[in-house]
Image (cartoon, rainbow, N blue to C red):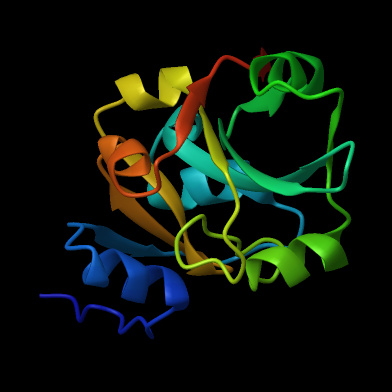
Length: 163
C-alpha cells in the first residue's frame, strides 16, 4: 500500500476540523501560473469541479471572496449587479495576500485572516464534490459543496463566464 503523503496543517484545514467538516486531502505538484488546469490534470478530476478562490474588491476597496469553477471566469459586471455594488475588480496579489493571509496560488476561503463576504457561483452548489484550495500551493481539499453555504455562509450568485 502506498504511503500517504503527510500534509501539514494549514489555517484552512484547522478551520475545517474545528467546524467538523469532512474533507479529503489532495496534494499535487504545483506549477507556477498553472492554475486549475494543472490541479485538475494532476488529480484526475474535471476542471469544472476544481473551485478557485478569488479575492476581489468593490468600488470602495472593500474585499470579498468569489468562488468560481476552474474552467470559468467571473463576470465582474454580473457579480456587481448581484451583490449589489457599482463595480468589482480583482485585488492586486499583495492586497489579496494581506486580506486572506494566504499566498496567491494557495488561497483558501477557509481560515482567512480578515472576515470577508463570500459569494459562490450557484452552479458549483449542484456538483457532488468540489476540490478547493486547502491553504497552500499544491494542496486541494475535497468537500461537499454545501459546506460553502453551511459553514462559510457563502451567498449564491450567477456570474460565471465560460473560459
